[in-house]
Image 1 (cartoon, rainbow, N blue to C red):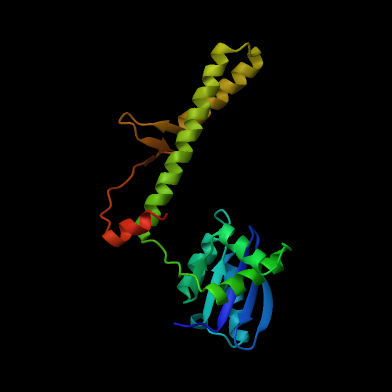
Image 2: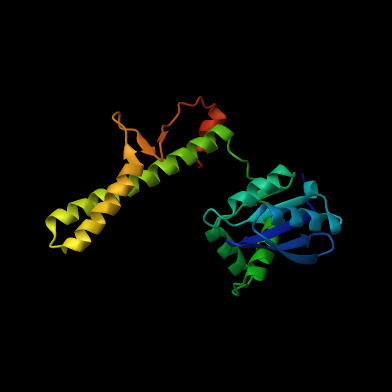
Length: 214
């Protein structure tokens, strides 16, 4: 399916700088919305005011930590085709156009132009089970890191010449963390009375290929 409209979205923690490119009339219109569910609704309503339906738009985003994820899912849910662009590829593209200025507005314009000229593959969300598994693994890793840090701090109390008042303070803090984030007898991590286990999930061949990209 060919698209007439390309929406470049520069993602920040608090906001989305958007540039809508009409590839037929070569017109560009900009909009800044909050990076929140309410902001996504404002963006969809703004597109409608421009006479543009969600199914007519190809949105292009650059991954920004985790801040782009909610926008990705929100846009796909309303029927917008979405692509994620490799930052290095985008920089080379901008340099090829002779663009060296880097501002939010400029980045969103480059993203829109990249969508028009390159037509990158559309992003597809992973199956719900795979996303749940990914979240569990991330939480397990975070708890494991906290536990290891507290163990290291406890060991330092033994081998270093730490003042007694500091030793007592660290001991109390470490015990508090270890009591809230501990390990069960079978080696599973437990946090806030919730045992984090990794479920066994049947994954289709297509899901296996997608999980390799997560």
